[in-house]
Image (cartoon, rainbow, N blue to C red; front, side, top):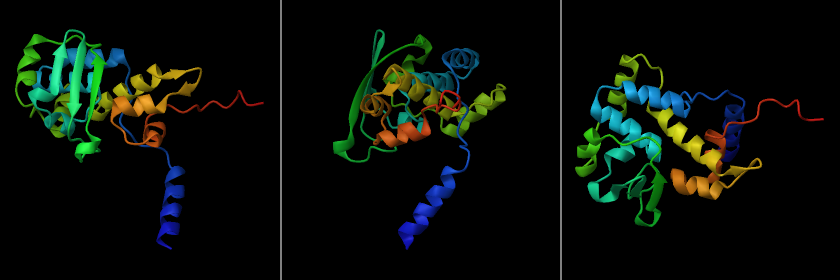
Length: 186
């Protein structure tokens, strides 16, 4: 009976429109990032754009886990929202598509205990932006989906490998921009 209730709730939820963070593109992210005056907040936004980590996951990183080598960023995630056991740890190597500012170097060289989501969102909203921290994570994930989609087919295993999701269904359902124009159906 409990399983039937859960299925019913899932079915009901699938009929509802999604309420997620505002989706942004690279240009919008660069405009926002260039206007943020608080260096700790700017660093966290930069890191979210480049690696897609959540603010709470960034706060768990130590200097040994993150290295910037020229145009590449190396991160070893020991603990995140979805990584809680040693067997779940993973590492990523990513291109740095937004130039790193030297004023952010102290945040790489010490434990990154930077601002929490509330502070980042307050700074964003105070600067007149309606975006939230999750807008920058969504940008990263959508860029990865685009990168690994060819001919309308997405390599979901590569996507979840870089985004830290545990299941392809999560990335497919929560991030992929779904086709809304069905006029092509004959």
